[in-house]
Image (cartoon, rainbow, N blue to C red):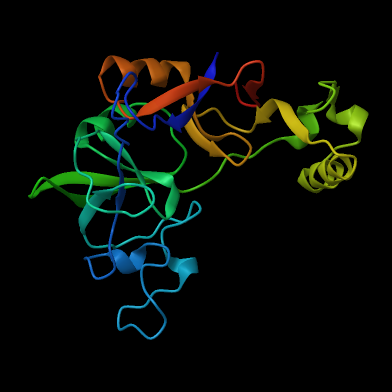
Length: 240
């Protein structure tokens, strides 16, 4: 089965004005902002330490409806609600999306890691619309001792056994050795613990299966985003 990375589409193809697709953010002072990473400051009445906020696979329970997200560009964050999308990237939440109910209902039929949809509001052209903050609650677990690895400079692929990799720490140590020699050791053939149709890997970031990609595209839910085939890299699973 093929897998794809989700990447920001930047702008519409063949758009002479190159209008950038917006992202979503929750300003300080908005309802629920303190539950976002860096959404409050120490000393604030509603201060929440960053380790207890929604970030890096950390799911928070009993949050209010996030009211409301604003659309903006990636630099100045000025108002930028020129297009309504079914999925927006969320500033300060690299692994999360702000998604429509259609997107939520569609992706929920696929196999996902632990996750949560937080009810939210999106301000779009002066109206508050119902959206959801979509966050995964766990990352993938890589069987480092079963993967194959590639030297980025030479392209040579070696097994974990050939490189003496038996754990994540071994991989990081070996990666440091390659870096000292002016190269990078990448995971070429991934072996993960469990099959999921959407997951986040620090090596590949946001990854979707081909069936999920095809379903999202057929439903017209992917404007603003592109899918990049990870080939020739591969992904297999211990439970498949």
